[in-house]
Image 1 (cartoon, protein in one colour):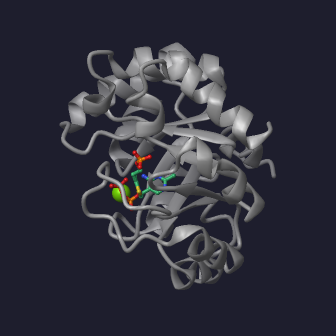
Image 2 (cartoon, rainbow, N blue to C red):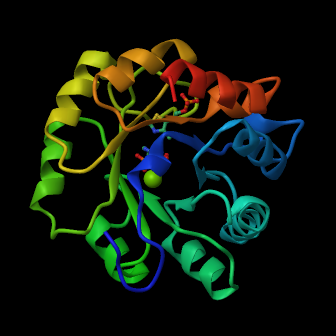
Image 3 (tube, protein in one colour):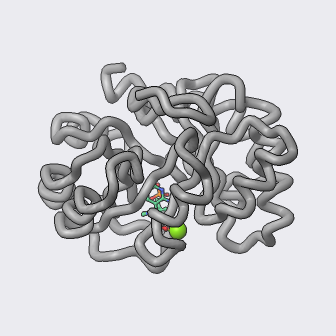
Length: 223
Ligand SMILES: Cc1ncc(COP(=O)(O)OP(=O)(O)O)c(N)n1
Ligand SMILES: Cc1ncsc1CCOP(=O)(O)O
Ligand SMILES: [Mg+2]
């Protein structure tokens, strides 16, 4: 669907969605890891910096966008203000991902406009079903999880497992990625369950070779 104000969302971009983590990327920088991951087949990036200041996240988003913003969509985790400031600076940044406790997604859509890509987290069939009650075009995609327990998000909800993921996906009116402890060995079952893609933090940025890691996910997905 084409929307005024920016590029339209292509669900195929969800295929291998890398969410960044500065600590897990060490000793490499996030932009270094992102460049390697994109070379290996990552199709979308979310800059997530839970312990960083707004200023630090803004600088990071602009640097990541400068390096790969013309190749894959760059989203900002949580921070609508950072997204808007990055756009104001001319950075190629595509949207925002929020969760159930962040700024309500309808407000995110209103602030970012119709051209932004807006993602919402779901941790259950009920949260997925609630997306259908929102005005059409509010949410472009959902991040459903955690599939497995993960140390990357200490405050995560009860893990769904692949069967719980399938149930939450069945009620979801928008394309969805699986997130949370997703390893290469999960790729086939999650895609078979209907995931449009996999969202991965540590599996890519903590890997010795992030480019190879991204390529391994793509191979395991058969795409
Ligand atoms: C693709 C994707 N899905 C889910 C999340 C989790 O978002 P949220 O629940 O807001 O948690 P934080 O990431 O903000 O800790 C995500 N970031 N990306
Ligand atoms: C951001 C987020 N939301 C649910 S689980 C999670 C962290 C996923 O990280 P990892 O891929 O390292 O398990
Ligand atoms: Mg959040």
